[in-house]
Length: 635
Ligand code: WTA
Image 1 (cartoon, rainbow, N blue to C red):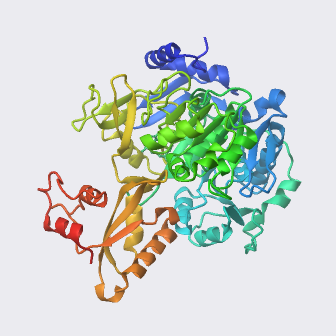
Image 2 (image 1 turned 135 degrees about the vertical axis):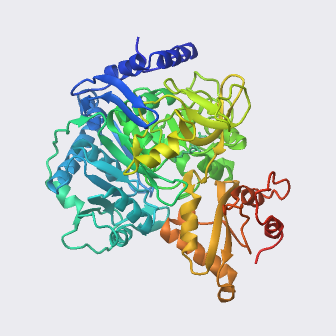
Image 3 (image 1 turned 90 degrees about the vertical axis):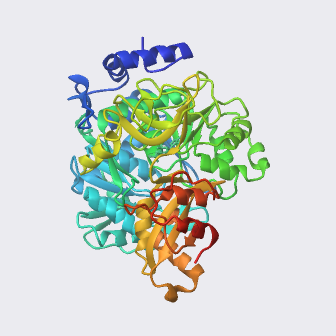
């Protein structure tokens, strides 16, 4: 029997048991039957949890792009691989067939090679959601270069940190991008970022927005003329299973972002497998994930997961509110989308609009609808179910992380009965556990614990680029022998998981992971600021918003507090990006600190959420009198 597709609940339990008892057989069979390999593996996996070393499909040889494109050509050459829906609904869409995709990726691969990129080199991709973004990712993977996609909303200083960290040799960018009714220059941001990066030799530029930009002689090249001349054929590079496929940065609880490294074979096997099952993918489906390829969701479920299954995937350049709040529903209707995968923050924003926007559209093509990135609250779940799914499409509330590579906990549509706010059951292969503060496994129901995974899975990140020690310490030291997710969760009486939120200093704002430490670092750069503490508080649309408590150095000089707030937010914008701006700023005399000098963020978080009593144990505070002051006044 095949393990690739789970057909019913009984089979789910059977596959799950098999995956735990005989993980080698389970994953070995899936890998063998559903992909093309140049050479088979010696061992399905090998690992050392203590040292955080993991290998999957040891010594096998493959190319993931051959699996995404080449092997489909005989049967699906004329089938649409990517539908590109531009920001402006008046601009014609592009339907890129598997044959076209092969040619476009091959051309890009040849350009990269001709310009000097070799296997193992790092290429930074800083592009809007246009076909060239997916094509660049695939071209890198085709020649064995490691892509590092940076979300096109990040600022120049955030970019230069990432480029420097992974020593990227090339950058692929565009003159600019369209977002709603705005035209945003991108190349100038790269120019500024590169003032501080020594590793970058060339910048390849896509002409998207028709913006007048400066090209630096000897470094910058327009892509189109190079692509025109390049050959549309390319033989994919032979890669080892454990060769890095990409680096993707995610926020951590210190200032330096973590460059999560994903490798080739394990990532391929599990993104394909999870895509097939979580979205109940069938041959003629039209799949649409609204994420940006700058995040892991876009990597795994716009590009790799769908293409590995020979699917048609929609790539949307724009925003849900442009030209009006029915854009998502227009697109679903226009392409007869069958699976729609979005974030709770988008749902909450669309919920506040007139219901006629959604209800006037024909959404009857939809079969499965999904949610990702943060807990979906009950109200949003019901609205999504009633108005988008019309009570007939199962909602797959998918829990996973940049680090996990693919979805780990999720209902299977038409198989797992859903329950609002619950991500429900782990997929086969995923041994989830909840741990208490004493590092014991929690057996009981309805008790909040730390969510850990006690056995490796194929698509897990293998390391943090250049810092294996940090990888080991962040994920494998808190609960020895287990991977710690950083999330809290509880389990109900049937074993369903509900994710309760982050257990560390990461706040999820509108579905974006933001570390509070780098934001504080940016604030502290302002000459007036002495110290700052940033926490998350509940927000109706964004899920969480950011609240900054700030103490000042030179009080007299900054009497105009409103102006100072603006300046501080500009600092954040230029150091990280506008997504990390504070919604509320309160200037205070002092921050509550423990005897060892740590800011007690727990209390600040409660106050930001309007809770002004019962702070629990505050005996370790050196200045408890400050709490009352923070509640009652700002300076
Ligand atoms: C949160 C996004 C609740 C969680 C794929 C996780 C979720 C972090 C869910 C990872 C969900 C993701 N329910 N919380 N269905 N999905 N999260 O790395 O806190 O951008 O640790 O990956 O998002 O965010 P990341």
